[in-house]
Length: 202
Image (cartoon, rainbow, N blue to C red; front, side, top):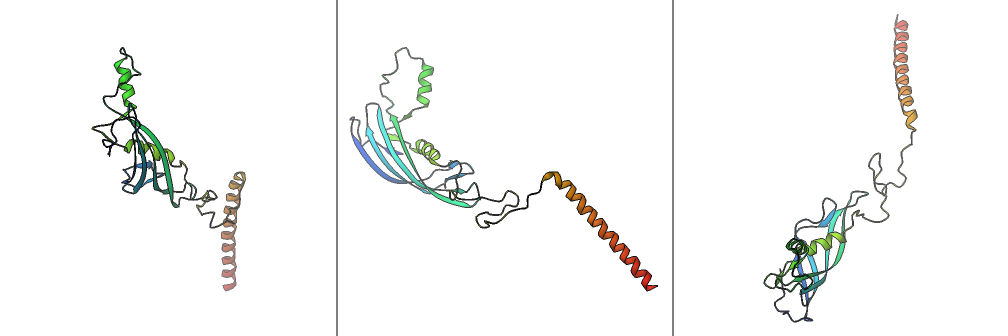
C-alpha cells in the first residue's frame, strides 16, 4: 500500500517515490515466463493530485525468468513496464454522471476504477497488468537460436551440421520389406552353411 496523505488534495501537488517491493505470486505468464515470487521490483513513481483523485505514473523494473521456446534452455531477461492509473477519491464528484444515471451503469463503471482508501492505494493490480503486458509471449534465449531437432531433440546451435537423411514416406514401407527380406536371406544362408558343415563332418 502507498500513502498519499502527505500529498494533500490540492490539484497540481506532486510527489515522487522510489521504492523496492517484493514481487507478488504469479507475476507473469503461466508456464512461460515471469518474475519469481519475492524477487525485487524497483519502482519509480510520480504521484499527482488532481480534482478526482491521485494520478499515479511510474515504471517497474525487474528480472524475469523462464525458458526459451525454441531450445527449452533457462533464460533470464530484464523487464521494464510503464504504467499510469487514476486512483479516485471515494467521495469524488462524478460530474460525468447525470442525476438520472442507471445504478447498474454506475456499478459497471466502478468495476473498472481504482479508489483510494483512507488516502492509501494498492498498486499490485496495476503492476501485475503492466508487467504481464511487457513480457514476451514467445521468449527466446537469443534471436538467432536455432532450436531443437524435430526428430531427435538435439540442440542445433551445438550441432550446426546435424541432419537426418530424408526418406520419402512412400518408400518407407518398401524399405521395411527389403530389410525383412535381407534378414530372411541371412537366416537361410546360415542354415545352408550349417548343412555344408554337417556334410563335411560326415
